[in-house]
Length: 324
Image (tube, rainbow, N blue to C red; front, side, top):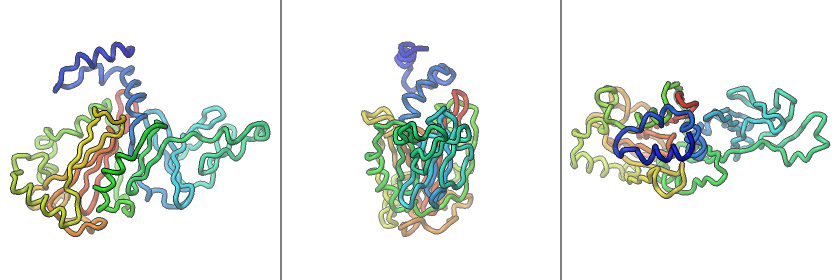
């Protein structure tokens, strides 16, 4: 399937309807997704609390690529492409740990925590080590949340400026991960993301969620409730502004972003089963305003922010028919 065929599929797409089958089932379309969307998007890979000590690292896999996210010193975190510059072997085979350097298990080429080549047995004297560091992905730290992008031209400034202010009250850089869970979904990434982004299915499919969240029960929200929650947000130190820079805007792929606050239903101050607080208030937040905030960065990274905890969602396309 060449570019002309894909362009024809797009041209024939009926607005407001599900995508045609080929967009989900075609391996050629998936390859285009990876090249033009996945590898050019800011993707959440973790939180700085996972690598608080120098040398601590974890490995993240994205659409066939592997990245070592490592703290190289007190202030710096690197995203190193996990591919040896000699013969393309994986340098780091562990999923996480702590190291003073990375040694390729194939020919023992050795790299420091910044990815610089330190040693290459038998050939070190015959090459310029500065020309063979581990390649890097771009990495940005937004309030402790770590995002990577494979596009060397990718710009995070617009995302950081808007979302940085909106998320500042939560002080997520001092937060810790309370729980992580990974699901492998036998579906194309677009199906998984589409399902997540619409709440039309929430009431019939997610009863527990629908008890608390007005997105599932819009008929429960009137102007008075909305004004009440939004009015309390400022006094609690929270941002109630809404912005939406959509994926089809003129900005670069992966820079789309969203932030919006909405009311929880009566009797709920957070997203717990009984609606009661589950942890101390985050950051500089002064109280519960009865609302929650959704936010998004790119096509793959999402958050649901309550006053006492934040849930982060990350979709990773693994193959045409598999999403993590």
